[in-house]
Length: 310
Ligand code: SF4
Image 1 (cartoon, rainbow, N blue to C red):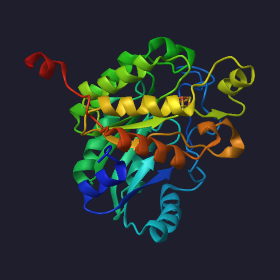
Image 2 (cartoon, protein in one colour; image 1 turned 60 degrees about the vertical axis):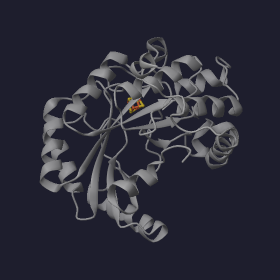
Image 3 (cartoon, rainbow, N blue to C red; image 1 turned 30 degrees about the vertical axis):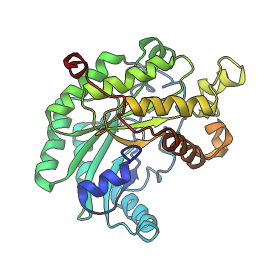
């Protein structure tokens, strides 16, 4: 095993293939509507980040049914995770949140995944998810956007929260026994390599369950898109990105599940994505490199306490 792939971890956990079905709700984000910030993160498209999602005008059941109709014959899967992906899925009235989640608790749904910001969670939402877990026997995952551990970078990209909010959210979610996935961007131009490697160490010490790493893609009509067109920053090369991600994986505990290693966005809306290569080709290159050097996820991992005992 080069690294702990999400698809394999799901088979281990559920005993069969399981797929995430995106659900798109008619909501927004507090970093867009002025309650935390305006304009949103500099890379975020007007339609948010759920490019594979169905129309938010469809009900949760309709979206799940449509996605199942695509996934079931293609991947021969019969169990699914309802993935509340786009925007900030805890930014709505509690009653509306409850209704959406309950609508997703169908017979072939084995888990609920709720994507949100670290600064937009409160106990009643977590308590309700805990009730759902107990009542339906579902696995609950909270996906948190962090993107960078560097507070200066977080300010530049207009995240509207810092590192402390992320740590506080992780500790709170953990106290409910839910699984946590953290989103990071591996090549933000304002981050150093050290920042990214420190993020791996933070994931380890906080016992975060999985990571979703994106290579930075640049969507037309965003602040980042404007900066890109003005040549306001430099992008690292694909080889440098691959080397950076490999080192990140080597620092990461072997138990952390890797949900993604490259960004994915439709060509029509982007100015830049994966150096004009397919993410699959880049992922193959990364895996070939790890194989040829004998690298594995976690082969550089050691907690400071283990190191002190040596
Ligand atoms: S927090 Fe998420 S939805 Fe909100 S602006 Fe940033 S990327 Fe977009």
